[in-house]
Length: 301
Ligand SMILES: [Zn+2]
Image (tube, rainbow, N blue to C red; front, top):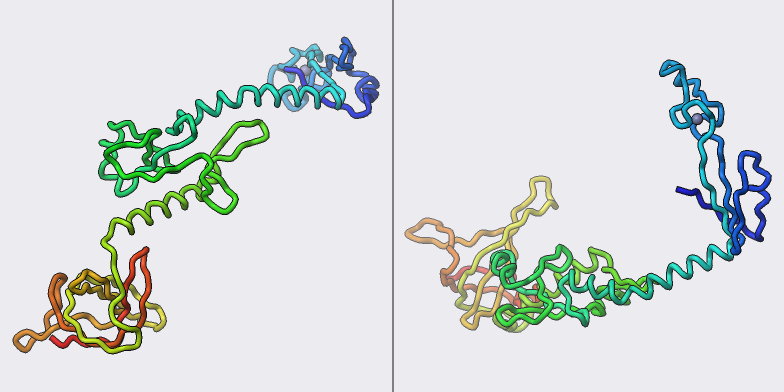
């Protein structure tokens, strides 16, 4: 392999004046070809003192001759730029074909479109694979053509996945490549979250904020979390309920849900109906669903 250098102002004096270099030829682009015959390993001495204990320190690169030819090519800056432009033009000329095969390999149509499978794909991954879906850690399971049997979201190479950022970016070479991994993964997650929310029955707000209520509700379960505001911490619960229309109501409290049966406290189980009284604290949204937040509640029956 030749070593390549570039000079400005067509000034080759640094190389011409180097006594270790022999000028072999100059071509019509003013490119200078030199040979450096001095062995780079031993510096032309044929001997390496710190290898003295091996074979008497004879240089293994030049076999002790001190001569090891190295080709050196020196170009003018102008010609180097011309070569660069030619190289770029060559890549650009082939870019369309390369991009097409890249899209195909990545599971996109010729137009750069793919259909991302929504819902829980993990449980049906073998089925998806058999149906011709392609897996990618960036966008999950997807089909280059719209499948009949699976819910999908359309994704194009030009889809804006964040402000000013498209799924694929085009480089100066004309080749395309994916945007940053985490931006793509975030975007796909937002598509999936929106889809999941749309699959849930629509909910509405219950009551009026600030007003008291007394309602028959079905307890649907609790989520617990530890608070660390005190030394001991306190277990907080979000108790969830549904009214007869399936609307969501939640109550954040450290109290557990108990009822008295035959003079003894028993925990209330999910699915049980209770009569709850309290105050409507706020109307909010969680993962795209409307929910009514309750406070100062008491189980009446
Ligand atoms: Zn040598």
